[in-house]
Image 1 (tube, rainbow, N blue to C red):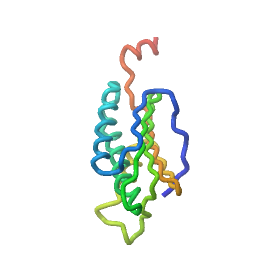
Image 2: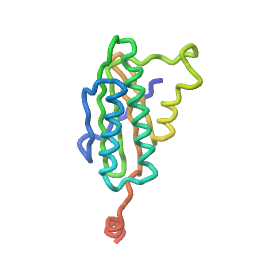
Image 3: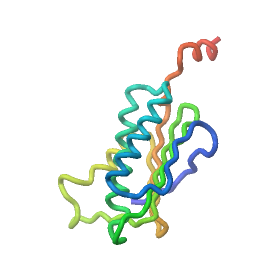
Amino acid sequence: MTTPSYPCPSADGDRFIRNDVVANAYNAARVRDEFATWLRARGDLDGGRFSDVVLAVNEALANTAEFAYLNNGGPGTIDVEAVRDGATLTITIADQGRWRESTPANQSRSRGRGIPLMRALSDDLTIDSSALGTTMCLRFEHIYVIRRDDADSILG
């Protein structure tokens, strides 16, 4: 399940960065909570999209913590970066592991909904897997509300 990547915004906008986080369930939940706090502090986020963004990030973190280092004999690390650039929010979650390939033998009727959920919640999702690891990039467009005083100055 590899799709081509696109460049994530660089130095423009607000940033949330967590590097070298040990990939386990506890740290995935901790980073999700820290990300949600950071996102909420932006103040002008459209209320309907806040939960979508946090749920998609939670799924990405959970997948990485559970699957990226499954065959490595121990946890590796996760890098997370979120960049706000205007009304667009781009979140990149990367690991240096190898995800388990999905086959009919290891699929479960109660599992396997994380990636489709991330696709449905985000405006764009890319997943790049290679021998160096996996990078997920979620993009959310037009999620910030224009404040009344900003709208007045824009509209004249």
